[in-house]
Image 1 (spheres, rainbow, N blue to C red):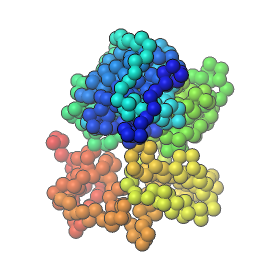
Image 2 (image 1 turned 90 degrees about the horizontal axis):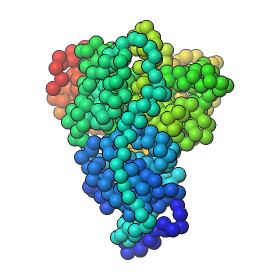
Image 3 (image 1 turned 90 degrees about the vertical axis):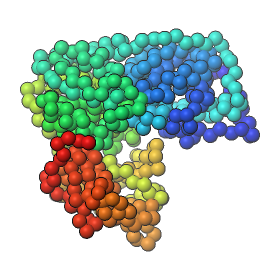
Image 4 (image 1 turned 180 degrees about the horizontal axis):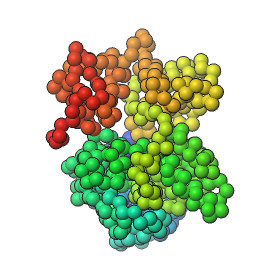
Length: 556
């Protein structure tokens, strides 16, 4: 930040606290309430002050509130002397591409997969370099608070804005990075969730001669009329699963709201774990880098990715690097290690040749290229990359997260073969070659960066071991001072319409035995949000038996 752009001091009489919406890696809040036009204007001004050179690209998603917030950001930035390129409708990775190609800072108006009422911002420095809490976001927050407290944004310099179209350059960049050289024709269903993949998929996938693109919910609509744009929730994949089977497609692709994440379904409609996609792409990128002369290319994966990712990287001749969860952190570590690729369990995939930024569409191209170069089904292609039993991420609302972690740590310290670390929360590994298969497991217990939650991930060589360790950790986490299992002081959930009367910690792990989806209360039963199967409740106990109850032929 230059001295000539110094901000007004915050007065004691008017303090504006933005810490509730300025998170570790981005800005997120309810539009019009927590994130207002005035706040957006102040953040745009403060971001400009933070920059060494005031060139800025601003883009926005299709949310109802996004155009107004985008205009406010541009107004604040121009007020402080920024030369703003207004990119209009864009996916987040489209903005990152523009930031990299034009060597300009970027600000994306989006709330990613959050509900329709929310909005937010993702910021990057020139070259798509991340801006997080430790790399400038705190300073930007304080600057915006100062402008809000002063009630004005003083004019500085001669700022201006002009329109820019970035879609063609974005599509060309992705095609150059992953050309589809195979001749195999592929039928691909893409669920855009009424969000930004409906804008980018036609330009990137729709022009490829090998691809027959089958569109699902491509019309942009910030109210998300069909389902939320969060592909990590099984219930949001039901329409795509049905379409993949109905169309006889080779695979399905589901994108989140700003299209920087991609979840893949195989030809059977089964969700492929993001860690398996990380391993698949990692081996492709390592092979390409080694062919170009790199001896041991690094690949970064966050610490809750499958153990198999590191194994796949080593097998391909690469160097695995563990990272905390969070896009700003993983991008920084990738740049420091010059890593060729990075992946997260949340279906974020990062590429060195894409300015170390994440791109769901670029990951999709890698998947399509791998399939087009093979002869079998996609399920066969990824089968080797999903060898272990995983719990998936279990989110827990706990009144004292620190105390819960310490209970778990104390219990684990009694195991002589267990190794612990605190890279991001608590990770415990109990996995040696000397151990039997049923004794090999690891877990991560960490606090969310955006919500008051503990997040638990468990993986083991065998399914029964995973379930045992998962349940033991959940019991420890929910143990209150009196030694009673409960959730934030409650020992059981209300029976509700289903009549299910089970402890709260048990409810957190209840899943459909057929598809693994979350269960909701219906009349005298529980219904899966994913496959819609109905499971009866008898005597207060859910009867969860795989294949016992037929899924309705039409989902209502």
